Image 1 (cartoon, rainbow, N blue to C red):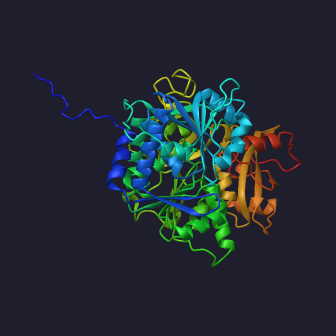
Image 2 (cartoon, rainbow, N blue to C red; image 1 turned 45 degrees about the horizontal axis):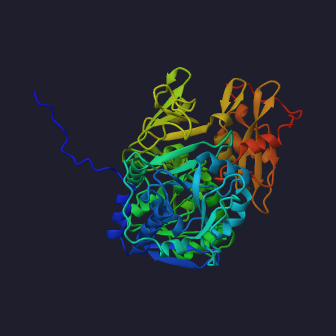
Length: 563
């Protein structure tokens, strides 16, 4: 009996094919960048394609070798997008540096990645100089984002000073006979580091194959639903998990891209939306929380684009925030992912079999979940006794695997403690999945509160507290308790001009939780500290309240009691 072999062409998946596709089919699509002075610079995809190939040619002329890392220290703009495709086209690996990190952290990460070149915005040169002593780049390529002249320099190899190049001059004098570097689809194209809030950051390295598959997957109609007709404002930084992979997917489909540059205050984003009305935006919840508060505080000043979709992730999205935007005709879709998952693992959409069966309130409750796993993402929930049923109740650690999920970390052998013996990524998120495949993130493992042998979800409490009309933000942390092991302490930020008491907040929460789950104490603070990616930084709150002691107050009811 003769075996049957595939007749398909062995053509490798490649970012270069996406770039060629975009340059040939969508030459008139636009890329808009907001400059430091808030003016807008426009490029056609045809311009971007030409410039990106010039960047790749210039890097090869500078001596870039296959696999060399090229770091970027940039805001969101067209030149950063050129690096996304131009560095891999030359055979290099683009490594985005998080400009919100401390100089010590930036230097450590650049050294750990062994970055050879650096592309940096001229307005970020002061930040670069603060960590230049921690890692010596061979060349520093300065993008004149502000329009100022770049003082090029040959450098001093004996004194440790790198050469300084003008980004625009390099492109202008690049060879015209560029050819793509030979590569395999599993060769690396980009790397990002995790936030490292509980230890040193870890590097995740993406391949041509993983990036193309992620782009195809997230662009599907039931997920991000990207098309050439979309106008996309990526508020998520391009240094944060590659802006959730959306720049790659947008280029693949010829979507118009509007980059906000360094101006991310609510007023600036609302102004930009008037100039370039988006159909799709993406950002962390804190961005949209501040934006809707600013919008509602100035009635009539701005208009929100009716029908706009917003992909929101990086932290739990309060149901109250989703409802606020829905009243303005805007759909917030919550997703879940990690740097390790490229990053989209799941995203909310309405499954057709549930339409007509769920009330509006039930749908909003689902919208506050983490959505449905993508078609190439396998998920499971693992409890103490093994795999949990998909019943929406049983919780355990969310574990994932798939073709765009990392199987190891840069510089570490596979099989570290973040991975199971059978090859799944341990996310550290505690979750449940219901029979329809909707994922509910209960908490991070380190943020769960164990009270009297029972678990309390800090996320559930936070979302409920932020539904109060006087509350702007809330973060709940565990505080050691002499009787119950741990009890929840709620740290609350009120809206400007608003006031609410601890007793009022407890009464507001009481119908939604058992008495033993309610916070025993509330601390009113000026702001919740945030990580470099905009998430609530609870470890900082735990440090702040490390010496906190429970006041003489009535003990909470026994966990599991009728209260």
